[in-house]
Amino acid sequence: MPADASSRRPSGPLRRGWTTGACATAAAKAAWQALLTGAFPDPVTIRLPRGETPAFALARTDAGDGWARAGIVKDAGDDPDVTHGAEVTATVRRLEEGAGVRFRAGPGVGTVTLPGLPVPPGEPAINPVPRRMMTEAVAEVAKAVGVPADAEIEISVRGGEALAKRTWNPRLGIVGGISILGTTGIVVPYSCSAWIHSIHSGIDVARAAGLDHVAGSTGNVSEEAVRRRYALPDIALLDMGDFAGGLIKYLRAHPIPRLTIAGGFGKLTKLAQGALDLHSSRSEVDWAFLAELARTAAAPPGVADAIAASNTAAEALAHAARNQVPLAALVAARAQDTARAALGGAPVAVNILVVDRNGEVLVETGHG
Image 1 (tube, rainbow, N blue to C red):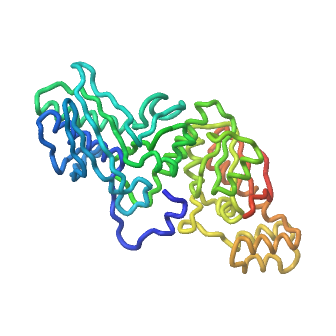
Image 2: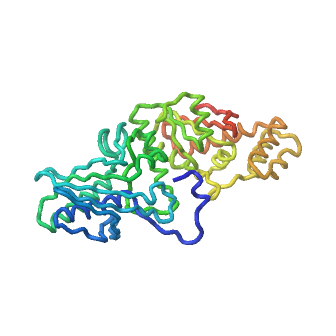
Image 3: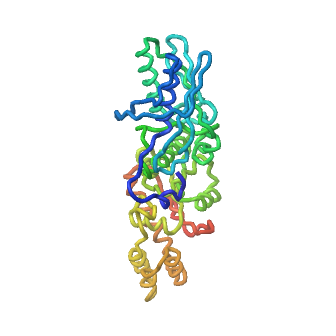
């Protein structure tokens, strides 16, 4: 999901969509049925993990000696999903009896190269739930026809290699294309589940690599500041965005010894206030909070009032800087307190890095 996606959220009721895993399952089922019976079901109906039975129209069909292929155009509903409109294609072939179901990465689907993800290195980046959905769909069709459920399923995504560059896949060590994802089969608009899933996957990969320090950044500028300061490898740099809670809560259950949270003064003020979702639509800077922090630092007369009347976080910070009030340091310390509380005692030392718009570090708490 693009970083500014929520600002483009349409008004009114939002339409749900389908995951790449659901589309791959529908394509695989249609191709397998055509291979066994000679006819493509169109639309093709599948069963999702929670029991829903959506039907998918086929965008492509093809068959040859010992193989069949079907394609589904992914509809992500009203979610600004990077794979919306992508064509997910399954090519199936029969295998020897007893072989079971095997998966291959076709063009546009990535291959896992690093440990820590739900599937091991060398395997197609097709997650466990989509694999189970496809296996069950193959078994259902095979049972109806009276043949063994032994099949090779190759999943491809047209343009997937280019799409993957707009995802976390390169940083997670997934090469060659996108991942086939989804735990329910349904995309809930603006739930940001794919982004949060990527944060979790990034932590898993970092842990598997034995890293002892990761950094969550609110954007590119703060990430570059972290990169310069610590020389961390790419797999240690987690594109947290606004989802501080998604990062911290996962680390609570899957700790890494040191965490740096880096961001601009405004975003980290929200964290200091106790907010774990830092998006402008879900949390706001509390000017009275900043004014009270200034008072605790013995700000000169009138400065706290000027901060309280500020229109932007940058303006509040400027009032403080002109009067030698260490507002950024006070915010960093409170943000560190919020992160520690959310970690719930997990063995993770937290460091807060406040960065200005030019990427210069204003203050750093140190790990503690």
